[in-house]
Length: 102
Image (cartoon, rainbow, N blue to C red; front, side, top):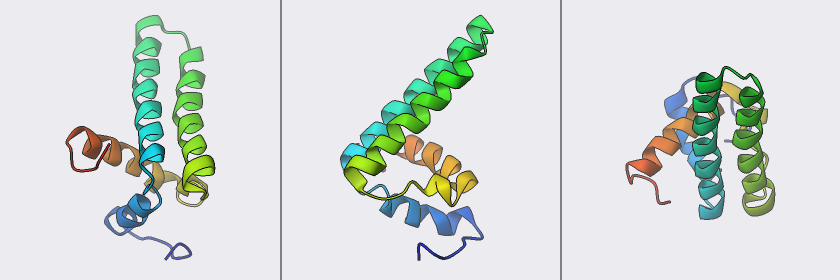
């Protein structure tokens, strides 16, 4: 299924969740996404564009550490950048709502 091109996010999301089966990886994604939101808050509060760079470093840095060290797979971002971005935020929401184990 990893070589398949997904036409809809609804078809991609189950694949995305399988790529995030390790709880430590999901936790790192959660931390990274939370830091992204804090960086964006700082961007709007200060107007300092350095917070955009900080947001990218936090979001991708934590996620990629989780994939390379715990999941031992390539982040879906490399092959499915848009769906992966959406998947990050859907998984983040699902973790907050208790649908996915944190």
